[in-house]
Image (cartoon, one colour):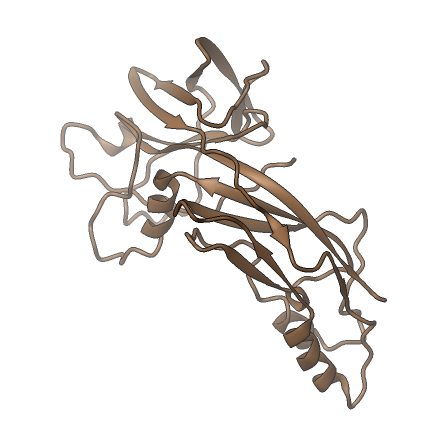
Length: 273
């Protein structure tokens, strides 16, 4: 499964006069249970009040992953500005993995444990009918009804209180728009404003508003179980910019995060009849 870009921004500043900000770096490293190791990036730090909003990724880091009693050396992939392993690394739920990143003379380390796979993933409807839409006086009422009724509910077991989040991705081979060119753009835009990536939650359900999706066809729902490290980082995004606090980090001798995810998938379709 293609990796999802996980949305967060790390804005850094430093009050440590012993470590100039330009000598430090940021690690964004994610392991996914059962998948290849290819979601690791290293970038330069920025002052919290920097006017430069473009990330600069480093290509000269020396990176090792430790797991199952073995050591794996990662190589840089210039096309995606990430580091990946050319060897098979088994990312197994419940196992601990170590990370070592060296940039120049600075060595950073971290550890993470892969969560167990989500339990009890299910969906209330795996086929949702949305009849073809056409401009007519009845269209507003039709859209209102579809907004209320064209839904499916995704549930899972959260009795242990662990955090999860989910994503919804269109996996059809071609675009097949629900809102065609005859429908005014603002109508389609309105019904496409809803998030298809949930926030981390200890809850056990997510209601999918199918009119928030753009195409007829098949959608893949991926439910991730996540570590507290990622939850803390996600929550730090809404931190008041006037609060001069370092963002959460589980990296020793650098900034950033090294964490792991376990997932399960389920699918549904939006059809015309």
